Image (cartoon, rainbow, N blue to C red; front, side, top):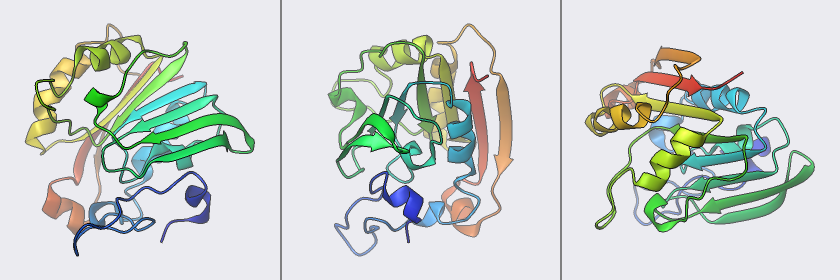
Length: 202
């Protein structure tokens, strides 16, 4: 079940459309290991000085419930996340929006700096005629004060995307970790060996 402190930040699993899908508040199988949220915990620390946080992806376990500072806005974009809106977070005013949409369907204008861009579980796909990583996303990655990326080392799609994403940055990552999560479900899915990077993190 969803921990109470995450419940207040909105649901994070897609409502079931078949017997294998997860119900709201139930962790997806490859995220149910207690070590899986380590990536979100690290990301929350990396973005702690950013008043604006944008996450692409995150339906399985969005960053919102892990943030421990008081940002002005948090936006999570993922076609599988239930739509959610709130005006407070961590006891302070905050514009929280979980948008059930492909990133190519959402205007991606950079907010005022400093802002953070978070991509945990990098696995983007094209949408119609639009590329998996449209120019607007690359511009966000380039402009972000803090950029956090996590991807599975054995996921072919992620390996095809990461080079283009890293090329947006002129700075070297302040943190570059390789992580192995010893969990059978994650290993079966090819998600157990991971690389976690942060650019601009203080």
